[in-house]
Length: 311
Image (cartoon, rainbow, N blue to C red; front, side, top):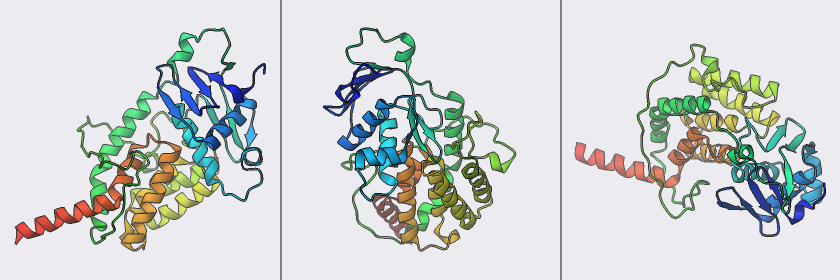
């Protein structure tokens, strides 16, 4: 490598500026990274196209501090968000199950005279089939969300909007879109699995647990599904879809033997972790917002109004 990544580099269409903490896209849009997040980015860049283990990252960035796996998981999620990357179909950051991560793609110095090719400007191409299936699936289950949301109506917990998708200063708008129906898989195990047949994790044992948990969810055995989803996450801490599905399981407190208040906090935590890993998980977004204290207070007011006019 003829340049120092700590001084800046290019990755595909992105310009990375560690001194300022900015990641600038081809369209000029800038995403600012926290110092630790940028330090991890530079660490991966120094070993581009090579495996960098979690231990190597911890030793280089946290320097032997006693920390859990969550900081590095959150950091990788933030990097993927800045690069508009996907864990399931990575263009820049690849997860090596049980080992670490690898920065893939062409790295160049900021002063590299070579122009950016049309291919690099295009960036990662979205999986249109998977996106279409996911949105159809989300709209199919949106009615189900209303039931667990009503399970929390007895709560009265003040708090600020802690949504990772907003700045906390405004209440997100809620809307429902009507989409065309599509044939769902006849095998219940396949519900929740991408139609493009791309596994959401490269860990086979975690994937097997995920499929068993999904099958349990489809028959409303959320007690079992919650246990299996947690086991899958233990095997792959970066398994965003498992966190999303775990949040759904917790959203039925009466079926997982949890008090409503405890279940609400578990939904928020699991959905938040899913969105840190993959901000595009629409179902996790819906679950997170349905469990927010402000949302529950709103539903309480609606129910009180309906009860008043009914009498």
